[in-house]
Image 1 (cartoon, one colour):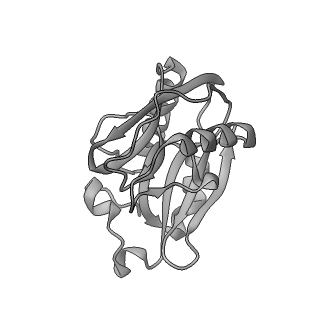
Image 2 (image 1 turned 135 degrees about the horizontal axis):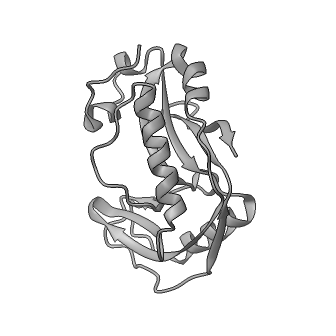
Length: 187
């Protein structure tokens, strides 16, 4: 049974009881190698303060929905339940910003309607399988670093023209063996 009453803040906690039998998940636009290299080039243009944590190149992505910890035994139904139609679209990234709490991001210069349509279709699919949605407004971006308060924001970088033709359900592992694993790509 899917958990319905958890808040966004409580979904993010990683207590031992939350992690037992659970898989931490998110939906994302997953870049191809050429786009990933352009994102890395952007990341290298920042002047990071001491203590900043730049996102490793193989983890750069654009989150569509954060699902948090979900029961591992429900994963097969979830994998099938999150397949929605998608129209490929072009996403131009190139707005470097430093958000609250030291989150350094690269945002699109404009948000394509197809991205908003995909986000909305996935929201309907999530509620259809009994998962709650995050209450905050969707702000598409690629996180470049965390704990980056005081970073020098680059005024410009390489133009990124990303043909988004698929999205992915990704597992996020924390602690020993941390990293991301693409569980399924949807085209």
